[in-house]
Amino acid sequence: MEEPGVRQRKKAATGFANAHKTGSEPKSSSAFPKVYVLLTAVLVLALYNFPALVKSPLNQFLGAPARHLPGVRTNYVPTFTADEAKQDAVVEAFKHAWLAYERDAMGDDEYHPISHAGSNLTKAGGIGYTVADSIDTMIIMGLEDEYQRARAWVADKLSFERDGNFNTFETTIRVLGGLLSAYHLSGEDPVFLEKAQELGSRILPVFETESGLPLSLINLGLREGVSDSDTNGYISTAEASTLQLEFRYLAYLTDEDTYWEKAENVMAVLRANAMPSGLASIFVDPKTGHYRTAPIRLGSRGDSYYEYLLKQYLQTNQTELVYREMYDTAMTGIHTHLVKRGLSSQLLYIAELNPERTQNGELGWRLTPKQDHLVCFLGGSLMLGATTSGALVHNVSIPPRTDELTDQGERDWLTGVELINTCMATHDTKTGLAPEIAHFRILGDGVDDSVAPADWYIKGARPDAPPPFDARYILRPETIESIFIAFRLTGDPKYRDYGWAIFQAIEKHCRIPTGGYASVINVDQVPVEYDDKMETFLMSETLKYLYLLFADSSVLPLNEYVFNTEAHPLPVFNPTIRTGFS
Ligand code: DMJ
Image 1: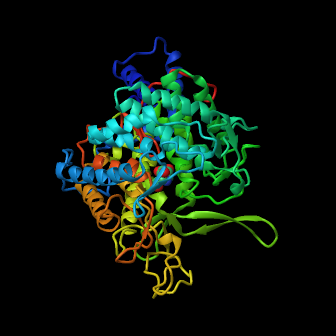
Image 2 (image 1 turned 45 degrees about the vertical axis):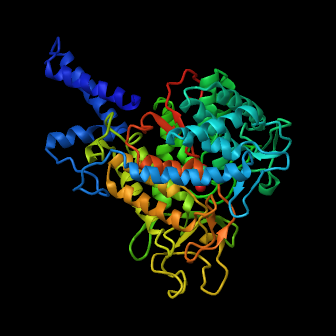
Image 3 (image 1 turned 180 degrees about the vertical axis):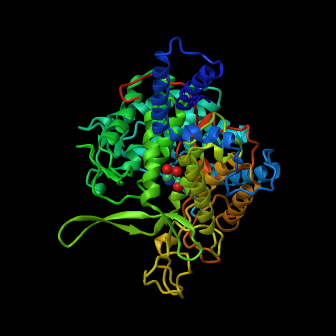
């Protein structure tokens, strides 16, 4: 994949070197100093703007050894062949989930594996939430029979003529994303694009606000955007900024620029209102386009804002530098304000900032040492960003060498590796499953040592009390997603071991013998108690990433695909549309 910024800079450097080597002499003695003054000025400017440019050549010139980055074993041979036995086990798990859903609830939005029943998001009827979210996994796993039945349901039964309010973001990432990915992976079966186009056009009214930021809800039947009274009409930042991959790809496929423009305008508004730290609070106001005074976090309502900054840059073949710039600024904000370490074993985690008024009414920010399971997407994302936005060369090695990354790339790589270790550490529970939220110990936190271990703990967990919400595992994919990316970028088999351990914990504690998988109410209690729900992301994300972790690396290579936040792979393409923002 071309990386335009670096390519241009490389060309400039080559031109300079060639002129020097071929000894292009000055024509007159008076021109001599001018040329060198000019060259020096150009060089100084280039170094000032792109200091990382010299890192690799300088290291080579000085004979500095090209270090492999820590965080991966040095004594392993990268593994890129499929582990078929483990892939088969994951396919069997997918079939265990899908066949139960198909038997008990085909076409319903959600599935309850213990009561063997389905349910819909609204009373108006289903919108293919589970089916659309699962189809591309069937194609990837080669499940032809299941795929044909699911395809027939989409062709014959899927309807968006539903007079009910659906979440704009969830409908986009799960249903629209699923249909678009199915379209691509099925060899462009038109049924999927027709449905995607219909859904996209029904969602478009959400952007009809004063700022152009979308409303949280869409009435698909009435084609009307609806504000969410639960959030006072504000929209989560992650929800507003996680529609772009889907709408852009839809625009690319259909040549309907309006999808592109509406989605891109959201990013322009967010950029125009950017907070100075490069971070984003978790609510924005669709009337004004301004960020609200609200928590800043990489967990719920914040997470995929950061994820999509990088992925928007990658989706259009690294041609839109504005996203790279926004991404780089945001990552620096995260490092400056949110990266912290646990007290005892120094586990790296991503803290939250919560706004607080002081007694004299001034606004301050309180750091909260809390990390949602959702944050675990960031480890892999940082590593992917390091090898693209943070790369000095076109194709970095696997794993990358220090001289192939910018300083920011190296920083992000190391942070990503450490964050994955932390996310794995949060699986150190009685079930081997990680809780929904982990709290980290800080000095003087007043937490009773007999209740909370030295590094991290589940807040509110007491042996004699009902488990807190934080103690759940709801079949989330984020750690596995990061492990998959880390494996593809390092080839280190330890990541396959991590993924296999999580898979086995899911099999042991979440699998319902009669079919399907359920959420677990307390990861620190054995035998487990279930919550009767199988989230759709089990089939769209968790099992897909596990399957891909054990696949050979030619399957959906990371330089040819971006995965939307619901793990629906969309191909990288060269954009044909240019707008002012780009
Ligand atoms: C998924 O729906 C998506 O990954 C979303 O971005 C965040 N949460 C869930 C999975 O945990």
